[in-house]
Length: 133
Image 1: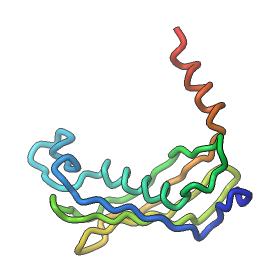
Image 2: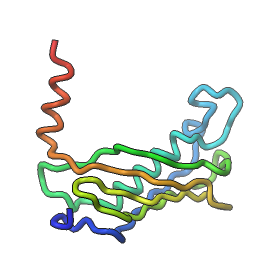
Image 3: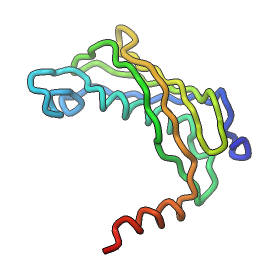
């Protein structure tokens, strides 16, 4: 993917202020009013998207295909979370990112997130096949 300017070392970042809609409680874990793990995963994805930016040519996009992470500290509502991503490996169409998350006090998680570069018209055609009657 170096033809698209995608090479190890690219970095991205995503910031979000934690609201009640980002809590485990909001996902059904009653009484757990802290930043949810699924929302941290989503922040990691957004940081990876920021790293890729608009480097892909028209007709191509990228999708998440793998996630491995730990969520090691709780973050209360009202704090800002910063997710950071660094592209560490390019294996054909697979982009491998190292991800880390921080709140205003400490590191709250880390891991790996992979994205796959796809030809968007082919991707949509395969998707359309799934919904044919």
